[in-house]
Image (cartoon, rainbow over all chains, first blue to last red; front, side, top):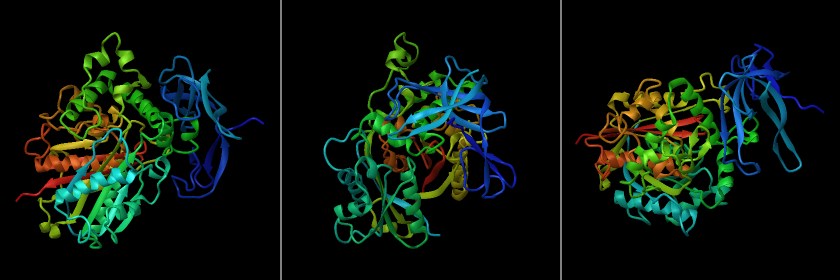
Length: 112
Length: 398
């Protein structure tokens, strides 16, 4: 089954959220509907980290904060050779952490 | 509300503790604070409440309920006791709660002890433990860490304001120079600015941790403890030293997920906490003579110095280049060495910052004294800025 990432749209005012909130940050409503969050993004900032936490057997990893065309800004892993602020990327979904008996899926941003 | 002052301070040597338990580490600072205030230990101590600030005792040291244990270890029973956890801002939060307990009239005298024994685990376990304060689904599960967010933040600040890697190193060297005069600092050597920035081997001596942050732009991992004894100002006569007044406290929160912030280069909670503390104290940024700002990463000292009103937005790094934040400058920042060189035992840090300002206002900061200091500001920063406490101390005129 293809994994997807979602935004959480307030059923009252339409405000989009990611990650999930229990209460809408704009109107205080408590009901949301899931909206698939994918497509092209713009790189807001990035880093390459060399001291990773327990469970990541790699010498380094890239991370980025990106903005979707719908305005949502999220953080994810970055698999781009020479990143630059403002560059267009595509948002993909993949395993971002391998757990015992469970893999965790999340955003992985790649070159278009 | 009753006025509250600090009548005793204590501080262990930060670094790597060899031998002893977490209770021993906390007790070192606690008894120093009691001795400093002239409070007898054992029966008749007159302490109503003990707050212990720690982020990781339950996880790193496998010890929960540490405040209850400390009260018994120090024979302060039956004083009330609670453990306070607010990430790296635990220390200042515990002082804030101590202030509230006295100001409300519930207590006359409160002992606040902050501590962390972090070097009992491997570097990657420690990094993972600190990262647990991030958003569990949107951040932690990606392998993101506090240095990762500091790298993301620094990159954007560099792009927006022209801050350079050398600017970060200038701040680091300044803090190391201050730490040489602080006997409790973790690191007592000063890196050479040229060697860590321009030398052909600089990339080896000062490697990247989270680009564009290098090793000398990040604080070390430290064990340590610090303590303050708070007292109602109208009950302070029984102590040896004149109280230093807690003139203002403010704290504020921001979004848990960093990416949700409206302006990603702002530290909104720092600004709001400082504004609240200034208002309570009836002071402005121009009235502050010395400050301890939470420089877990050197970019934070620069941006916090702007958020608390010392410099205009985007000019903090220029002030650092011009030496304005050195001792003798317009506003000396991190005279203790800061988290960068004094060290950063998470739960101890907020208390340690207050200890330094008390010493400055008493005129006891030998070798690093800001002459004539009458008001000092501390900023203790939790998460990646999602919970910040600002504290203003003043020296009352005789």
